[in-house]
Image: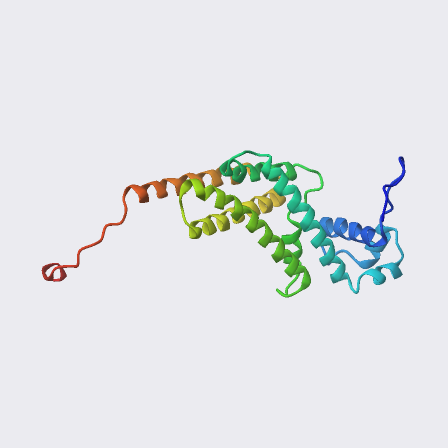
Length: 225
């Protein structure tokens, strides 16, 4: 059984982790195609032979690095969102505040998964699959918040799914605009649009409840003329 290291010492980082660290940093900053295996090996401080001991190809390394980033990013995003409020509405809108903090960091280079997917043509490439699974997990978290939000609003699963899809578009849109423009306040613009979306949907739901659809009478012969 592994034990904690003595005080003042650090746990050694495995060769595999060093390769993953190097790959993630270089690819996130410069892209997949612009980053070669030699650059990854050099940054990791390992031998080229070690690379092929742990990964069968560069694609396998990139996919593994993205899988690890997915777990870390989702944990960060979920924890940050949950700290934004006790109600589902506050947490949903708070997602954009969490993003703004990220946008303001020096190492923000957009969404690593959208960036990576944009470099890969095949939808069945391992990198595209990891990117797709990441967005599916993000959507599932957003949908869980809307499910709680729906309990108070009284609307159905179809509306939850629709609002969740629209929310994901606003989140990814904010990330893309912040990357291209360099403006962290893109998150605030997306937040305003998101608040309007919730308010409009609530008004529509209220009108529908106040004015339920009446059963129409069949047309008379005269009205058909």
